[in-house]
Length: 311
Image 1 (cartoon, rainbow, N blue to C red):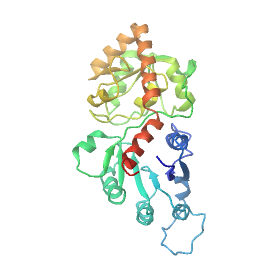
Image 2: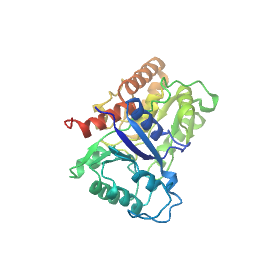
Image 3: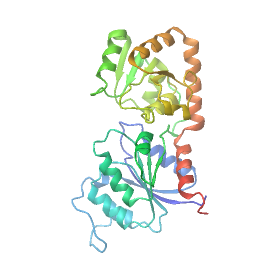
């Protein structure tokens, strides 16, 4: 594939995340492409959109994007930029436009997908169920993965994260019963952590015996990026055994699966008592992610879909 000039609009400064955009940018560069990163945060102070020919400051981020000479591709995610500015950009850009939509829980998802699919040649989504239930002709499945900025992803034991059972994420409506059952079964041997990423997450995965994931909001063909992040960071993961996971992972080899909360407790108890099995699965889960599901792999999959047959 030829070297591409890619305008990449993303959130590159968020320290309370797994720095997904930095991983993707790094993957694009490692594959030999030129990346022009534009931060979403530069748009926060804009009070109006632009028209071609407007006398506007050249440092405005929307002007920066439109002034890039001969870009091949414009890549962006669902962010905080208003629809009016986004439509202006998508309308004026003449290169290939690509949206990679991650999360399932945004309340305006249907409207947003309707919008971007009308202006973009390609929309990639992590939610396989959404794709199966709709008939857009330019929307494709592309899962997330793990970062390429710190491989090997190896943490160190940290007493702060040491426990029998851990959960990293947010407890909100739909997850309360999951949290209550874990608390009632494990008491102070169960710990909850929020905003644990990067090196801290590696340490969590090296210190907690079992990391759990809730059923909600996943379903048979959608699961959170935390599946890849925890396995790829070396954690032992007890996760809903969704049907679609069979495309990439084997339950009992790469992760431990469950189908309801009663089975979740039985599964956790089994692996707490069988350390050798637990550690073997932990090792194989990380190996599977590092060898097959980094963001470099995902970007190769994306670009192959876009450019295969063009050259």
